[in-house]
Length: 543
Image 1 (cartoon, helix red, strand yellow):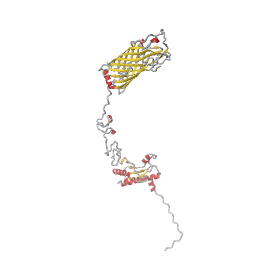
Image 2: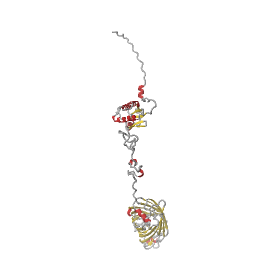
Image 3: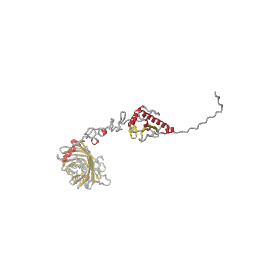
Image 4: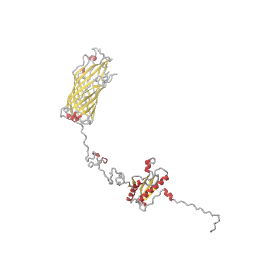
């Protein structure tokens, strides 16, 4: 059995007698094209033709081995009951109200041939040049899913096809009864013109049994795509897989799924003619799957009609996006520009930079936008500034290791502290507070912090700050700001703070005393005087 076919193994031999009864025949034509120019050959797209626009033309198709049998045992060659078929579908379609379209398809088998039909009860080969079943088609767009020809996004439609028994059933060109097939179309067109389409539905057919195989109701399906190649010239590529799933089958009979894959090229010419040609092969899933298929079509739309204009709009490439709106030319576009009429940097949302404190550092980069940095400042902040009840210094003071000697690199910072105090005379008392990390003992750290605080206080006094406005106090390691388990934390804990005390109405209160000061000033009891021992030796004679 070839992979391109699933042939029926017939219980009849070539020695079938003339008394055998002919089987009920059916229409073996799998290729059923659609008549609208933008339909994907046998897979429909959702958009109906424009109002009162007409499309008409022929579809010519050729199928190789659309109906073949293999005798029982497989030792004889296959029997091609219909070995080839050349069919012409004359089609016409008209659009209504931009919401619907109706069409007609008249199939005509121009030529077909095959083996002797004696194996199915008749003499001679299949009849050639016969009519097929006349088909009426309809399509209605789904509200909310009606998309223009050049539009993008989702589209949807419902369809209905009705076939009338005009075809020659004995020539496998008709079903002998009226059939009907409702369906659903869902598709999506991308902005670049690529279209993806999905078809599904139900096909009501008369029940037939042909050589032990059930042929009846089916569920048709189709998946197709159109990809622009030269969109401006109207050249696209089309591809599709279509078929039908049989809903009835005999016991121990494989399910019939006639299907094929087709590919082709299409040209939407500006004359109103749409040319399509291509081919493909069947999947071998049914007795009605051809080995090879070829097709070509010429569909005509009268020029200057609404449908012709729609196809011309489809051929136009998508309009480029509008130029960016940037009236001030600062590179910040549209709504992102908070100041559209005045140029400004992107980092400031298109607005000009401001410098409220006039220190040369713009406000968006100034960490202290309300205080000038001065000649020694950094990041827009002065080396020292008042912040509420504190004097904040930009960098920590540095001392010699384990000593209270201030390193020269910290002199500018303390000079700035002195300047702030002298400019804020209402701050009549500032506490200089020394702190250490957790290394060494409590007593050692307390003493070191006291000495460093006192050293800072002396520097400020020497820099012009009145001594009565200053107090110094050491806290050792009792007030950490960070975890002493890390080097970074210990660096933050080794610090000197400047706290401004609230003003008092009366005389300034005395400076607070730390524990060591109190311990030094605590009164101690004097030991009783030891009485002098009387000397038993005789006094020396006076000279």
